[in-house]
Length: 462
Ligand SMILES: Cc1cc2nc3c(=O)[nH]c(=O)nc-3n(C[C@H](O)[C@H](O)[C@H](O)COP(=O)(O)OP(=O)(O)OC[C@H]3O[C@@H](n4cnc5c(N)ncnc54)[C@H](O)[C@@H]3O)c2cc1C
Image (cartoon, rainbow, N blue to C red; front, side, top):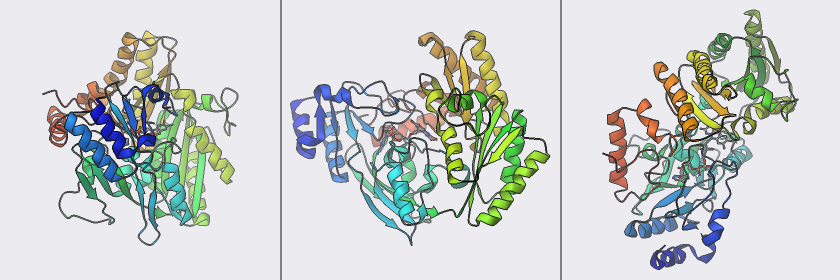
């Protein structure tokens, strides 16, 4: 880094909030999502004004900037090179306001998801976004990725929970769009340009979220189904009989479940491993007695239709937690694996997973293909491991995953985004005109291509 820009950044944040030299590489990635941090420096601003000053200085000299939230994204969105500086949002972690009457939470982008959930719970309200990385991921990163998660079927993606935001453009311009209202059609709703933009269009510094009522009833069941068509029939029954309370419908193939529970895994097994598919169904509502009865009637209906081989309804908070812990126990499946996240019609997911398995194990007989995900949202995750990874095997597996998806007209990213990892496959899910419009937006907002360059789309390609 030139002495001038280094001096300017140090001047903006002070010596204690800039990391340089060998210490940069010691930056940890809690979920091992990225191999290492290689950059000229890590700067940690404490306010939108400091972020704006950093961007002005970097834009003037064409210095590339990679924003870091919790760095838990799964698509190499925080990949850096020794030419970049990392702008870490961790110090913008103040919860500014939690308003019980307006049902809003206003917080800095560096606030962790867990802290936001806790702050909402303190005033007896509910923060409706939830993902397994809640302790580490930050609100800014969550919004930059438009994360999905465990309750999308009921509350939508992160986008549906954001009312307003503040962002800093590549040239340091501050766009403060801190709307607090459910309705506001005063011109373009600019927040949507930054939600899901993966740090390539602007740096999110503050956010306004919409909170929801805390549920007074909570029902969770873990079921087992033999055939995938039975899983789909159970989803249809649950969606149509519990339309106002169904909050999650998650599926785990045995290959996932058996790694999570004993004897192979860490957690107690409420249902014996070895059955074909496991389903987590959750409802949240306002009346425990009525909702509990409706939930039990729905489960009995599934039994009567012969859709289940096994099942248990949680009778305590501890049992509910255990069932969710099993679903969140992703580490044994995704660690050391190549992980994919696709969308397609829920009814097609079983055939798709079978086809992927056949193609991959046809080439690599020892490969392990593990599937699980948010079936209620048309979303399945596939983790592939037990392969000697090299350029050839990675290419083969990626082609299998995306090649099998094309006939189903699926999306190559359901919720994890594009980052660096999926950029070359974007044209499977987006038309040329859509991709060109993304590039036009990028070139317009960041003409010097300094913000997270190379992620999502290559701005320089024409
Ligand atoms: C265990 C685990 C479970 C997960 N479960 C889910 C799940 O269920 N659903 C789901 O959708 N995803 C899931 N994810 C992935 C998800 O994308 C991330 O966990 C989360 O959304 C990213 O938040 P973060 O703060 O770590 O962002 P980061 O990883 O730090 O950043 C994500 C991207 O946004 C950019 N960025 C970061 N902060 C900002 C900012 N303030 N302004 C602009 N750009 C910024 C970064 O440059 C990067 O490109 C999971 C990940 C893990 C490890």
